[in-house]
Length: 338
Ligand code: AVJ
Image (cartoon, rainbow, N blue to C red; front, top):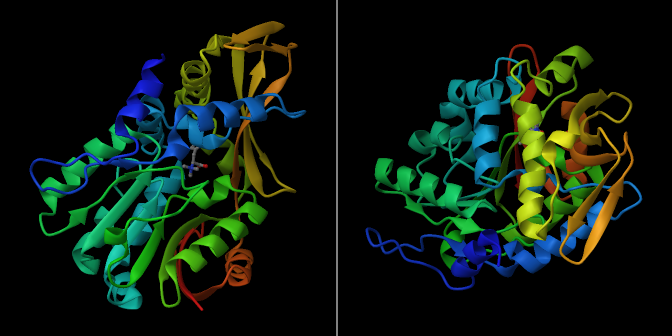
């Protein structure tokens, strides 16, 4: 067995308890299990236009690389959003009102919630991520710093399922979805996801979401093609992750990083382009690539404020506030379920 699948098996389905707090340390469900992942990867790779879902970036190494991306000079997103959150934290907390539990899909290192914890003071925080180890470490750190906060990490794939344990649903619910992670969905998928969230969370629930905005192509192209090559390493790392899940022999150095702003479609696209003719073997099959063939690894969709408000409205969310930076590069928007 691959070490990765053993790791997931160990977590699922029962929960582990943290000795210090008695809280569920990490809960996991089948949707992050090896069989689901294998099937999903193979479906994408064998499609006419091969792709790997962006969530597969985030194994432990990928989560670390993404944390480095967030500090790159070209990658304005994290910095800009953090500025918006910290500059407006009082106003944001006042607008949101009383919040019982905060649920954050794709929480990763759980950094962004820190901007809000002091002013918002929720009772429960539920970070969700598919990277179990990384999530657990981040949760431990947060527990140590905010003793009054119940931290209930959940190893889950929010693309598939958004079912939450009872403890996660105490008081008014806030879905915290920062980082423009929503941009990884196409607009249609995003709308579907938000509708599902509205149904699950119920009337009166809040959504505080980070949405990256339209801007000059040059700024976007630089943000996804950094000079140090961290984004290229992040992109190629998805193949290491695929190798473990599939027992495959992708050679990441035989694929070139390609990222560009597709302006008519309002999205950055990332691809891995085969630099040679090659065959990749995996347990149970093979994949052939001619030189120039590519695997799509990411869409990062960009919106206008108005377009996103409209998209969310169709999904059942009423817009109540929007905060941006002075250049209007990024927005943090607040909605409630109608
Ligand atoms: C985490 C989805 C917001 O799309 O900008 C960073 C991921 N990809 N560099 C993004 C990413 C390339 C990121 N999101």
